[in-house]
Image (cartoon, rainbow, N blue to C red; front, side):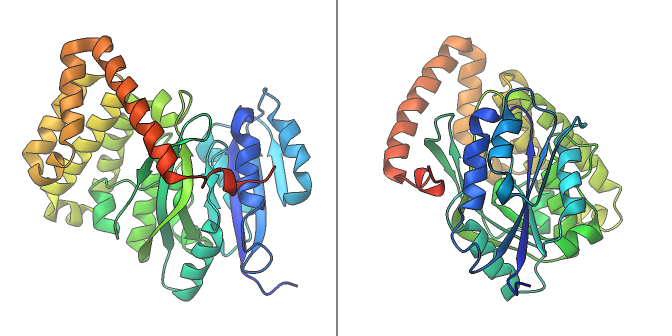
Length: 331
């Protein structure tokens, strides 16, 4: 029996055949597999109709378990995997996202080095449909208070200690969009979390991705998450003591998703609230506010012009970042 730590990775999948193989490869070809850690890989497919099962079967020898059956969505699929997972470290990687080389080994090193940690997270990049980098997301050394202020981290760059997840509970299936952030709050209320300033994951941006296809629903669930937190005896006093920053962060995040969901007027309303509650933080996003104003007054034509400029900027960013994505998979 191997003495290496076991890491359980769960991929919830539904009709993402265009990206699924690259996701799988980014897991099973991770540096350190068999030397730094052992892998338990589980895929939970929601009865896809686009050929995903054939891709999964192609890599069946690398899987500890997989299933393809109807479910109630991503949260239920993740929980199916978590309930089967045996690894002391767990994570989920959506079927359109990628791990970058070394991500799992680095997470294992951090979590084994500090048994008090419940969660570790890295930085991430955004990629497009062709896997070209379009943005970088760098986070801070955040914990419970920052999460309550709706400071968002990138889910595929997160690794968790399974024993902590089992104590705080699995993913709340009443959430469709903010399910990960709600879990981060519960974990951070239980145990310390740590940020590592290394790029661990690539999150794919495309028209069917949740943060694009259900942008306005994110805003609605942000409100529900806030109301849930107020009902928690351990969290409510912390929110009350930090009320303006919590409301400022919540308003700013709502505005972001309303803007992504083509609701610039609502976005401006919540940017105004963010400025009222926490001006220094809101002003860090001044460029989004200006974009919302231009989009609201100029309509789709202006939005299309801005997006064209963004594509040129992203092309320069992709060249500057290099070949990190292509090196994360084989074949």
